[in-house]
Length: 129
Image (cartoon, rainbow, N blue to C red; front, side, top):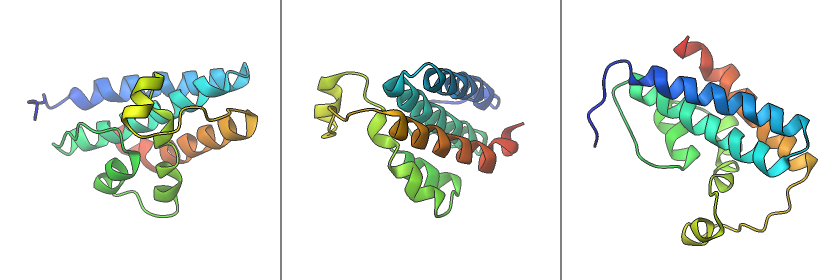
């Protein structure tokens, strides 16, 4: 496990905010796959920022596992589990992760992803400000 500086969580938070803003921007310009990807990335980086602030770093992409470690509760925990499928950027990475990559992205799916991201920020973002 890598050695972490006491303020490394701030850098993770900065990246999480950038992905948050990009998810919303992508949704607004109808780039649905990008909106889902950046929503997932924002959640992952926000959760990792929280864990790093607590002195932990878990090098995984599974939002449910990260969220459990961060103390996220139901029903948000289950909602986050559905975002994990949006992290692979390349078809071969999706296959290796045994995830279906040919998901048909549309406005409904993108809105759901961005809404879950917003819920997580509403629930946990205040702990890092």
